[in-house]
Length: 199
Image (cartoon, rainbow, N blue to C red; front, side, top):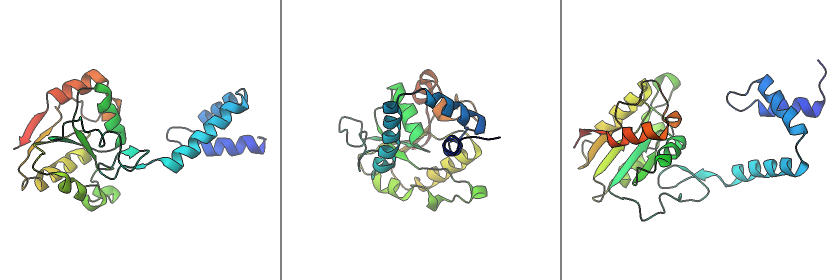
């Protein structure tokens, strides 16, 4: 089938996104045809700015426009509690509940020997450095998957030497679900019903 080169190239580039196959990419391209040139330029600039400016927070590992993210730089938050999550998507999902007022620590992955991801590949060493006398509780908020469970047990083990309470989100979160897709009510309940697993 003949396609204009510029059309074909854009379809190919849009297909890099997860869940976007050739047909979906083609629909996106058709919708872009009717857009103003200014809108396309704004989209292009946003993509370039995102790639240039986005980075990982030096303290917690969350995506940020700055070396230290807005959450870590907010001294009104509760510095006695740190919530451990897999990725930045989980931080943003928890923040939508407006129930959690502590800080975060983003692992940027989960232990998965099958995929070749080991503890040393995760943002774990800096977590230990963050646990000072001020920190009274660590909340493990990882997906209830096999990888999440393995990672939770590993973190629980390395925190045994620290004088800190360790809790985890309530098992009210359905097994196999992703934290990023939970609605705010379910996430709020899971935070409120978290269980202590060591103290």
